[in-house]
Length: 149
Length: 115
Image (cartoon, rainbow over all chains, first blue to last red; front, side, top):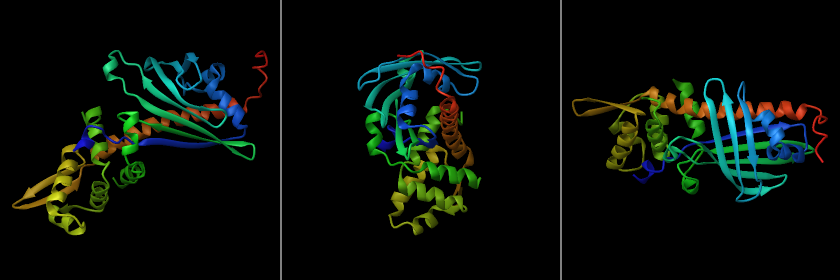
């Protein structure tokens, strides 16, 4: 029953193609001025962005929304390959650090004849180290089943 | 309570096993007894019973005992909590990526100050 201690939580995987070069899309993710313009979804404002984009470097950003107030996300860059790939740990700050949960965010930028296919993967796992032990792919099953009910 | 993190952990853990996922898929088509589930899988009845218990403990499966027969059905609330959680995460990143599209479509003139 070890799996009850380290639950396999599904990965969120999204793909989007932009009519912009991988360099421009990569820059959007590594330039605080540009990031502040897209990272706050809806009426959320993304501010106080700091980033040290290199393996082992850290970042911090504040999401300020009318409903939730200010929430701070921080993490450490794991893999930095301009303009192809960025991976970083991701955690929402909590008042009690013991409640914080670290996940892994990976963004890849694939060149398709000058356009860029962005692949975003957010793995919300019990620990980053445990992810390789877990089988994924049941996100679809949950979705299919949700449709059954 | 249905949406508590502990409940979600238990649901995700229960669904992390391929045999248990197949049991859930099978039950999505209709209720079965534990005996009928065991007959459909090439593993021992005690093993099936263990899987059924994990699913039951997570809230994914409901068991009704009639005499000596254990009837299993899916409990939709737990699955809804799990799929709702996934949808929330997905919605957040979808909105971020939509906004990124808007930002990239803007002519890159405002940023010329930068050396």
